[in-house]
Image: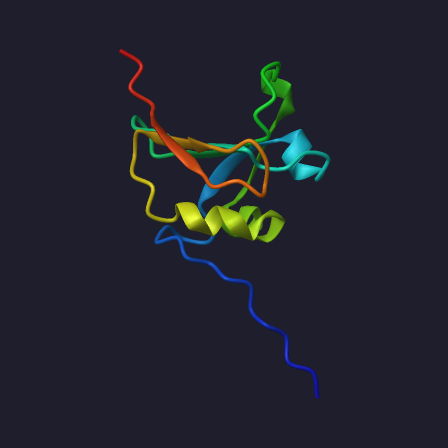
Length: 102
């Protein structure tokens, strides 16, 4: 008999919470290196950090799907609204930053 380890999911938000990802992340051609938890609407964005994204590159998937693409985003499960985090590579620690745009 085989036992499969359930993938970890730490977020308090529902697994079905809609999140924005770039097509690079969705297609696994680039890793998640830039994350935001928007103050105004609570939306999560999980992006590759490439500076030249356009709106047509954005996809909507569930938060559970995001953790399936990269389980290390579970490290951000307590990130409050109005905060983002970035890293240079998947081997680096997440570095938080404020989204205060004023």
